Length: 216
Image 1 (cartoon, rainbow, N blue to C red):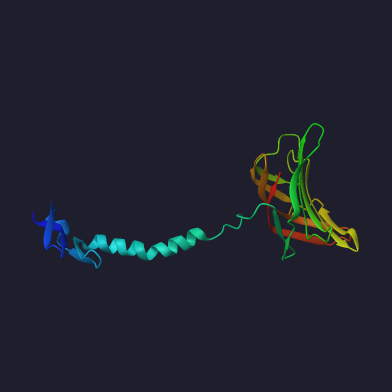
Image 2 (cartoon, helix red, strand yellow):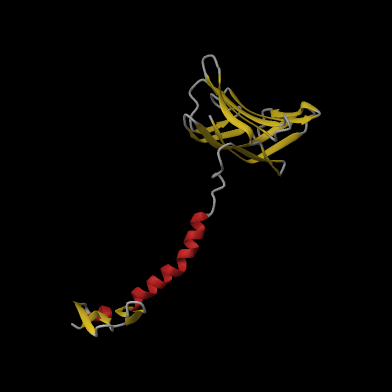
C-alpha cells in the first residue's frame, strides 16, 4: 500500500504541511499531478489524483456550456401572458391586443371564450369558444365529439367594416377544430389549438401551431 498526499507549501515562511492519506495502489497507479500557484499569498497547492477522475472533470467542464445552452432554449409554449399566436394557411398571425379569456353564462352548463384582436386600430380578431355540461378543465376539446356541445373558432377580418370576412368552424372531418387546455387557474388559461375553418364564400382556412396564454 503506497501513500499519496496533498501538499501545501507556503513560500513566505518556508513552512510545509502535509496531509497524508492512504489509498489503494492499484486504483491510483495511473495518477495525475496538478499544481496551482497563488501569487498574492505565495501559496502553492499540489494535488496528486487519479487520471481517469481528472479526465471526467475536464469532460464535464467542456460539456457544461452545451448543457447550459440547451437548457436555455425556449419552449415554444413558453409565451408571455396576453398572447394568442397561430399560423393561418402557413402565415403567422398574432392576436394579442386586448386578449383575454372570459367565462360564458350558460344555462345548465359551462362555457369559456378566448379572444384577441390583431391590432389596436382594427377589429380583426380570433375567438375560441368551448361550451359543455361539465366543468371546463385541462384536456383536449374537439368539435363533433362526445359531450363537447360547442367547440368553435371564429376568425373575423375587417375590410372597411368590422368582420367583413368571417371564417368559422364548419364540422371538418379531416381537420376538426381542436382546442387543448394545458393549464387553467383562477387567473389564467394556457393551451394550444388547430383546425380548419370555412369562410362565407366557401374557401377554407387552415389553422396550425396555435398557442394561447391569457388572463381569465
